[in-house]
Structures are given as C-alpha cells and as structure tokens.
Image (cartoon, rainbow, N blue to C red; front, side):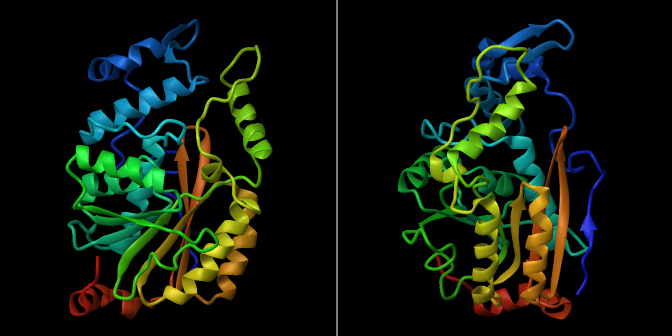
Length: 319
C-alpha cells in the first residue's frame, strides 16, 4: 500500500481550475451587476469587496458560477451555506486526477459520483458535470436543502444529470443512499467542521478579524447548524465516514473527504490504515493563504482499479 502526499503547484490552485489569481471585479460586475453594491475602494488594495459581509460573499460566488460555468440560476434557499466556488472546483479537479490513475482524465456520464451532504446549492455536482460531464447522486439529511438544489438543477437543465436522495437516518451516512446495484467512481464530502456553534463562531471571528480594521464582530457566513456542526466535530464525522466505507468497499472506487484541520490528520490516517485500504492519499489544496487537504482511499487494488470500468459495464447500476 502506497501513501503518496500530493501537491499540485504547492501554494497554488489546481492548474485546470478556471480561477487563477485575483478576482477580476471589472468583468464580474458587468456579468453580475448585483455585485456592484459590495465593491469598495481600499486605500492600499484598490477596488475590493466587503468580504466581512455575507451578501458580498454570496454575490461574488454567484458571479463566478455565471462566468466560469454558465450557471445563471443559482438561487439557493436563504440561510444555507454559500460555498466558495474556486475551492470547490479544486476538489473536483483533484478527484479527476485520482480517477485518471496517471492516465487520461475521465470524461462523460458513465463516470458516476456521490456527493454526501450536497446542501442547498448543488455545487460539487454542478461543477463536476460542467467540467467533466460526470453524472451524480447527491444526498442530504435536510429535505429543504434537497428541494433548493432540485430547483437549481431544473432551472439549469441538470435534473437528469444529478439525482437526489434523502438520508432519513441522521446517525448514518451511506445506508439507504448507496443502493444494492450502485457503483460509484468517487464519493466527495465536505463535512461539518465544528463540534459546536460557539466553536464555529470563534473560528469565523479569527478570519473576520483579518478583514476588518475594527468595530464589532459580525458573522460573515450563513449556514444551517447541521451544515456547520456535528457531534465531535469533523474528526468524529470522518472517523464514522471511514468506518461505514468498509461496508461498501466493492461498490465505490475512491472514497474522499475534505479535512479542514491539519491537526486531525495524524489521528485520521492512523485510523484509516487500521482499516487496511488498498491505497490511500493525502492531497493538499490551496486557496490563497488557506490550506486544506483531501483524504482519499480505495479498497480496490491496482488490478481491480484497472478493471473497474469493465466491472461497471457488466453489472450496471440503479437509479
């Protein structure tokens, strides 16, 4: 079993990421006029956004979805998380590298992925389909979030490419979602990071302090509590994710999950190795000064991985 640690252009976005460098506000304000109200003049940086305001963050990412992916209707339910488009795209490109296995990047609807916790915006499946034409299943414990994503998919002509499934067992992740005949090339997951709302607010205050020169702290993000908080935080959630993955080891080529906190990595990789995967990877991702990592593993050995697509053709799958 190998343990490569991957970093593509350390400190930079993935080279296939459509976003590279500073936001082009002049272009984005023309594409998405609602962004204009959040643009300010900074004495040193020049034109910039009021990043401490949740409305500015949402407007920016809507503009990026329109510019890079042609998504004109990305109106998710109020109060839910607005995902940062460049970072989400990076995750998808790294998953594509995993599936390429050193060869050609796989394209087309025969590649089927599962997004655990798709949320109200459908961000990962939308980018995954726009970039590589993959087909998707998205799961969530929140029916309102699924309804929001469904509206977005219908508005953008993607309802056939992305199927939605409700996880009505909040204590489980894959049960009832991965069905008997499903075969997934990859699973992606952006888990809740925090163990409490107090912890979530403290982490955000540290970020906002870097964006504000003073004044009273104001939360600059939205998000339902279950999107931000899980018992035991991300470490416990990912441990449960890994434990459950063993039951579905023949139905999934690559399991992947985003790890926000580096100090959790040693614990998680130790637990993962005890489960005897055929291979696992720690993949670094960068967005500006922010660093995160993807933990990826497979129970298929190199020979089984080479025959995976043939296996899918022989066995088929179910919707």
